[in-house]
Image (cartoon, rainbow, N blue to C red; front, side, top):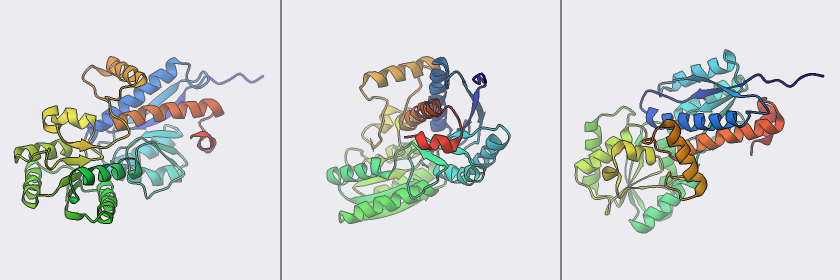
Length: 317
Ligand code: ACM
C-alpha cells in the first residue's frame, strides 16, 4: 500500500518589504505568516506543512513578474499569495496564466478584470466605493476633488466615483494624479489647490507613503476635516498609524474590516498577531484578507488533498 506523503507543500509569497507600498505589504505578509503558523501547528494539510518560498519585489511591477516566474518554474510552487498595487497584480497575471499558477490576491481592487488564475479576496468597488460615495454625498455634498497615485487602481476608482457622482447630479471639481514617489512639496501644492477650489470633500486613492504625506499637507494648509474631509477606500488602520492619529482624526474611510471590530474572534486574532509580531503592529483590511485567504487555501487543499490548481479552483468558495 502506498504511504501518504508527508512532504511539505511549497507556497510562494510576493509582498514587498521595501519600496513605496512596503508598510501595507508588510502587514499582508505578516497576516499570511500568522495563518501559516496556525495551519502548520494544526497539522498542516493532512499532515503536510506549508513551506514558504518568499521574495521582496520592492514595490516594482517588473520584479513581481520575474519573481512570480521564478516561484513557479524554479521553486515549483503552484500557488502565490501576494501583490498590493493593481499594477503589480497586472504584471503577475500573464505569468500565472502562461505557467498555470494561482495568484491569491488580498488587496482591494478596481474590478473590470477576470482571470481564472487569480482568486480575489480584497474588496471590490461595490464593497467600499459605492457606500463611501453615498455617505459622503449625503453628509457633505457632491462637489468632489479627486486625488490619486498615478497608476491603474486610482484611474479606475475615479471613473467609478465620477459615474456615481454624476448620477446624483454632482460635480468633479478636479482630478489630480501624483507619482508614487511624489515629494512633500507636490502634496502641499495639491492641498493648496484643494483650498483654492473648496470642494465638499476629497476622494483619495493615494497609496503607500503618499497617504501620510497627503494628510499631513492637508493639515499643514489648515483645512478642516469637519467641513471638507478626505474620504478614501485605500487609507486604512496602518496608514493612520503611519501618519499619526491626530492627523487622521476626522477623515473617512470605507472598508470591510477594521482592527477595532468588536467581536471575540477579531479580538483574539489581533491579540495573537500582536503577540507574535509586536504590540505596536496594526491590522487592516488587507491584513485580514491575507490572513483569511491563507486559511481558505488550506481548507480547500485539505478537502481535495492536492495543490493542483485546477482541482483547487473547483472547491475554493
Ligand atoms: C490597489 O492598487 N489595488 C490598491
